[in-house]
Length: 214
View (cartoon, rainbow, N blue to C red):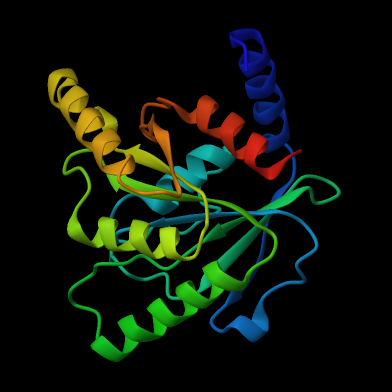
């Protein structure tokens, strides 16, 4: 894709996200999933990675996704519809790697996520969010491996990029790219974002649009 085409796609994405974006439902079990009639883009990441904040920035809303002071609060698959009529959905998945969550709860989350990833025919792409201050941790690698096994293509998105120095960020981006290349379902290009500063948000919107095929 040329630079001009990317710019056009980004403009389209900005316009689309400035329109209708609405919460649809929360699915604590697979039986509550909405009809698989439009593409879905799923967001996953370690608890406290800034997933809700990024979703809010991406959609240009202040609180469409609830950012909690208690990591691990999201225990269901939360669906948001984009476009009028609905063109695609964003799916906020349960955060992982939160040590204080009871073992049974963690297993329930894992089962829900694993089954959704493997069996959802309209899942177009997954975005794996990684905290730029830490880079990929073991729990992120486990998630990436799960996506590899489910044959679900995914993009790695660094969050909170404004929280570290440029030299440190460069190092983390390189390390994350090296990790991504080890995984068959991962895109080699890393998205670097800051919800607070708006860094990389336009490019990520364009990527979501392209992945949804709209």
